[in-house]
Length: 62
Image 1 (tube, rainbow, N blue to C red):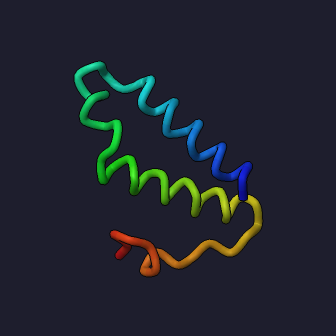
Image 2 (tube, rainbow, N blue to C red):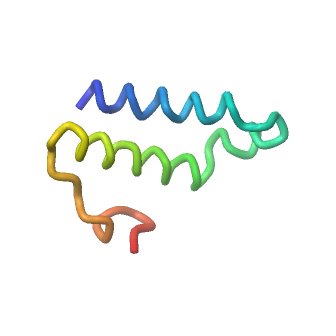
């Protein structure tokens, strides 16, 4: 779980580093980054062979 968290954090940081400067301030802590963080954690769980929660169990899911 700790490794999965590290991967998610690194992916978010990389995304922020590659977005235009005018977007950075708006993207630091937003519903988008929070949703992306949750998505990355779920993807990480699925990638590691751990059953990911169904989308309807996640905030903002379908």
